[in-house]
Amino acid sequence: MTAPDPAERATALARLAGAREEAESALLRLYKAWFPTSRSRAQKAYDEAARHCLPHALWGRQHSGTIDAWAGLPFALLFLEWEARYPQEWTEHAKAWGTKQSLIRELAAADHDDRVRAKLVELVDLVVQRPYRCKDREYVRVARAVDGDELRGRLHRALRSENSWAQLHAGHVLWLLDHPDVPNTRHVWRTWLADTGGGCGTPAYGPGIAACAGERPMGGPEQG
Image (cartoon, rainbow, N blue to C red; front, side, top):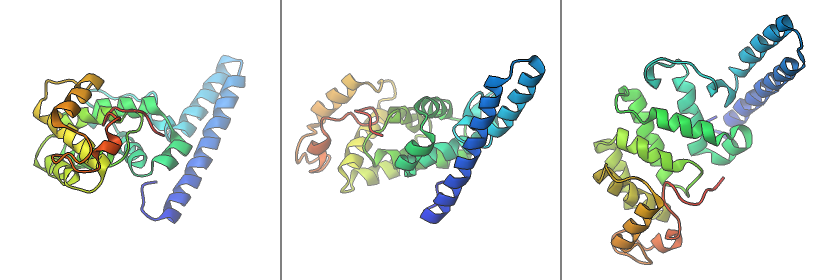
C-alpha cells in the first residue's frame, strides 16, 4: 500500500478489499446470531477476519506499557505512512480519522528504538510538505517527541524549498520545537504568523507564504 509502483499498490488494495468483504460478511453473521453459542462462534469469526484488514485490525487493540510493546505496531506505522504518502487512496479505502489521531498520540513518546524513531521523523517530514489534512496537527506531538538533528535537518530543508506549504509548516513546527511549552493552537499559529510577517514575499519564509497564510499549519482547515 505504500509501494511507489502503482501496480503493486493496486494488488495490495485488491487484497485489502477482499479482506474487508470477509470482515463485513462475518460482522453481518454476528448481527444475525441470536443464541450465545452461535454468537460466540460468529464473534470469533469476525475477530479473525477483521485482524487481516485496515483499519479494523487497529481497533480494540490490547497492549501493556508503551505502544512499542504492541505486536501491531508495524501495521500502525504502515497505516500512517499510507495516509501520508497516498492520502486519496487511504481516504477511499481506509479512512478513519479517529484511528489516525489515537495512533499518532500514542506514538508521541520519546523512548522509541532507532527504527521506529526514523519512521516517525520520516512521517513528520512527509506531512509538513502537503496541505493540511484532518488530524495532521497531532504530528506536532510526534515532532516534539523525536526532536533532534535528523528531524531539524529535514525541516530546514523544507523551509528552504520552493514548496510554499513546506515553508509554512516547517517554519511553524521549528518554532514550536524551540518553544516546547507553547500549545499548538489556532491562536498561537496566528500570533506566530503575525510576528514573523508571514505575508506575500516575506524574506524569512519565501514568496509562496501568502497563498497559504489563511491556513493554520499542522492544524488548519481540513482536507481529504
